[in-house]
Image 1 (cartoon, one colour):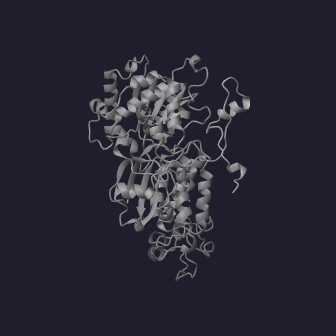
Image 2 (cartoon, rainbow, N blue to C red; image 1 turned 180 degrees about the vertical axis):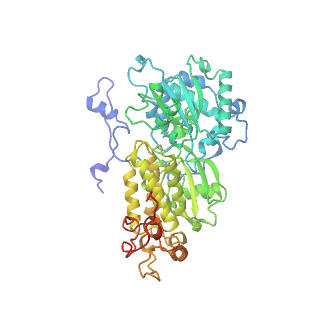
Image 3 (tube, rainbow, N blue to C red; image 1 turned 90 degrees about the horizontal axis):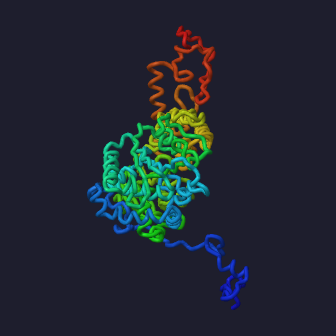
Length: 551
């Protein structure tokens, strides 16, 4: 049997000791980073089951001392001086080789991000340089950074020193959520202990490198979790995102070069460097390396925060660490895999989902912050997503019109679905509204508000459930086509809603446009509700005119 030419083994000519042709030299210099004849096979096909000795956050459950003595017993601050003396380029190369991606939700390669401040000629720039740690963890369902701040604050402080050295920063600002009282105390204690031990400050760790760390408490605004709004808040301004460019690496805190990084991203850096990038890269699929803190809540038997391997199957994560779904896996309705800002996944997609950036992106969702919210079949999913919409409307800074007005309308329209006053055509209107918000704002809060609603409409619009039919969620074939007894018109709500409307009309009279009573409105001035059904003969009514001058 003769193999095709492209399947024959390729033998490269050996270079002569005296001379090497340019072609041979070019072939020998080839690396997988520049030329690949075929995609590299995955490192493994099964993931999960992280061993205790491979966990980075060994005090996440606060079983040990969170102070400096306990931290040093767990390996923190070990040979940190040697790491700092290696220099910025070496540290960045180690982080790049590890495959670490940002743990705050975006998943941007950390080594690349940390290198943005070290452009050629940066030494000639006399401005101070800053690292800002985003500890403003306020997204519903997310509590991973809280456990680091409570139990392992010294990992964060040491990570600030290592990351700061990689960026040649002069100081780090840790911006912590205002509601984190205990956490801020633990972090401040860790900062004070590190200063006292000589680990930070003047001549940090005896390396000759000066580096200060400051703690800055927020005031409760969720929008300050966006990196430029966070910078504005530290500067004492309103927490409103900046238009980019310029990017923070050029013009950041106080107009100086700045890099904003998540708590978990910074805290894992020293351990990665001590154990080696190959150790970290062995976990997870390609481009999704390392370990990750997952916070699982909702309808599980044992909610928890756990460190696991990236790419662990979602079902295994829930069954192994949370004791499974309440009522069993068959009782599962849907799962939000990455915090309230990502689309919900139905049961059949949750069964095949891997907990990493690429797998969840392919399923039209996202890893986000790693906050898993489980909802069983007893969940009123319409009300749950409506609550998300209310949260984002409340937390919008109001700077961008699509977000300010769009989130308001999202809340109002979702409330109509909740109370059973929605109509079939509103489904497509709601979808169009989310598309008008998504991608049209300065920051990602508009996207975060739109995506949960999109996930609901994408996967659950035809669900035949009590929460939909009885409350008037009229998606697809789930429309109740019963006719009202008194008007004979097509009813677009469930029987319970029809009953409530009939009882209300018997007591107060028929309801006209905008939800007001017929007796309170001048029919000649009334405008038909675009989202409702015009009542026949309303304009010809002889109801008295309300004397209220506000109408």
